[in-house]
Image (cartoon, rainbow, N blue to C red):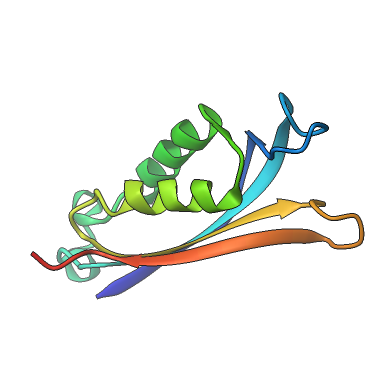
Length: 119
């Protein structure tokens, strides 16, 4: 088992349900911890055997930036579902951070962890 962490992936999407948020894209910051099965890449040094985290980021960007959301919880859940479609991924933690969501705080975040279900 191995872990890839992707930190501070900055995206813009429509998120929120308050009147002043509707129809406006806002920054969100995504942090990922992906536990996955190794495929020999740690010994072979062959890129085609590695989990393609560039592809993972592109897929997340396409998903999140193409939709509108009311809740951070839904964004995080959608991302975990997407990542668990990769056969090698066994467990995912997704944190979605919304900067300046509250007047006197730097940000508000929600995180969720999901495991691949055993067959």
